[in-house]
Image (cartoon, rainbow, N blue to C red; front, top):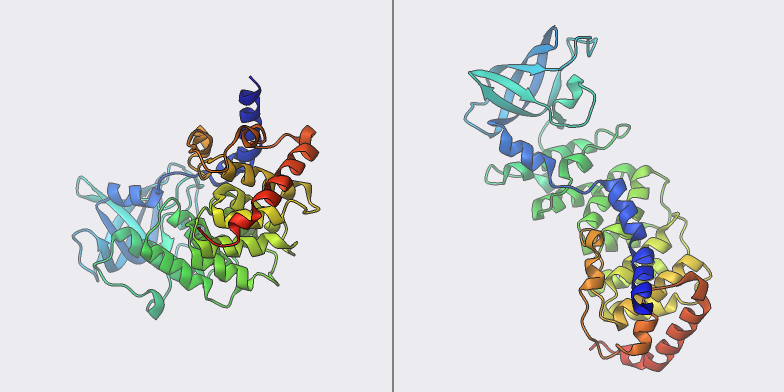
Length: 370
């Protein structure tokens, strides 16, 4: 009964931040990949000459390039969109809109499928905006690349011109990872503008990219406050779970001292605790004396997970508590370590004393990697 109660306490303490992140991020399958699979044609072009009759909007797309489907560049394609509302959706009928468009052929008529879901029915949400002129050399591609990679690269290139707008790259790349997508985020991370840099680093860190985390760790000392920066902190806390030794070192340094970035030290500590590899243990042990109660508690949890062979805690496994169910015996597992698995606030001093004593007894084991 006592062991079951301790396990419940461990669950409550260790997954609460992850579940909060799940609600905030709404992790799901890639909506763009699904959209590409449903439509007949994906093109890059400019939408012009809009005419509205009731809920149906007719307009032209001047096709510049074809990413998917059997169309020829250079044509002016008549397209319809069922807006679903009767009131006017825009005032400027002469405005041109260049972007990535998704089209279906329905009984010989081309129907535009909105690129962005969950939005109000406005013309600007039908497409992903793209940049004018050629792509930057760092992210240039050819037609052999998958359609989804092409789309995301185009969206990434346009972000540098959208400094005062809500980012679209997050939505376009949600739930998807590839070498090319990371290349696109790396491109953004190397731009000079704070917003673009933060967007790029957030995209890399969310995908477990070690170089992205190391770049952030090297450049984070004087950051501007921004929603993108807050997202980086959240992604380190909730999604970054690479056991790479270089990543552990970066997380260890980030967790070692308070930061000007709100929540960063705790986020790094939580990532270390969730990963809890052998390389992470010395960094966690150093946090046992941290003056912030939440940080020291997190260190206790991480050390107890390591000693008791608990699996790595991931955002996807948190729902089913897989990290607690996936346990292997370690040389450090004992009746006592299992007794102090997780954390109980009312027994904080007792937990802290036990893991400090455990570290004093075993610290030489971690002097050299094994």
